[in-house]
Image (tube, rainbow, N blue to C red; front, side, top):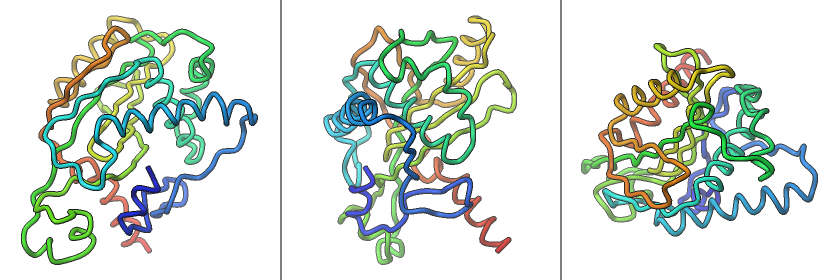
Length: 244
C-alpha cells in the first residue's frame, strides 16, 4: 500500500500522533517471533493485499461510485485488528483494547461477538477538481488526467462518539475504502452494543455493518468525500504548524 502511494510521487503517507508530524511510513513494531511474523501475520497481510487488489481499490485514483467486496469475515477482521493494534502501539493509544483479541488475530480463537467488536465498511466519494486545482501539484499527478480525485491514501486512526463512552472507534482507511471497528469495553451488555451500532450506522449514511454470515457486499459511495475523512488530520497539521 505504501509502495503504491510512493509511486504517485508523495513523500508523506500519514500523521504520527506521538511526534505530531507527517511521516513517510508506519513505524515498525518488532516484538513477535519470526514464525508469527513471517507465516501467520504475513498471511494476513497477503490476504489484505488480495482483498484490495481484487476489489479494484488498489489504484492511484478510484473513480467508481460502487465497490464490491468478496471477503472472509474472520480473516478480514483479524487483518484489520492486527493493523490497528500495530498502529496503536506506535502512538500509545488504545493498545490495551486489543489484548483480549491477540489469540484471535493469531488464528487461535473464535470470532469475537458483535458486542465485543462490531465492524462496518464505507466507500468515500471522490472530489471534483476545478481548473486551478488541476493545474497544480499534487492534484494533477494524483488525478491521472481525470477531473475528479479519490486518491489512495492510508490512514490508521481512531474517532470519538461523545454520546457513548462504552466503545472506542478505530478506523482503517485504504484509499476510498473505510473500515470502522467499534471495540466495546469489557462488560458491555449485548443490547447496549446493538443500540450503539444502530446509532453509529444512522449517523454514518452509506456505512454497512459486516457479519460472519456474509461473504459478499456492494457499497455505494456515501456523502463524505476522502477530504472529509482527512479533515481532522489536516486541522491537526495546521494547529501544529501555528504552534511551531
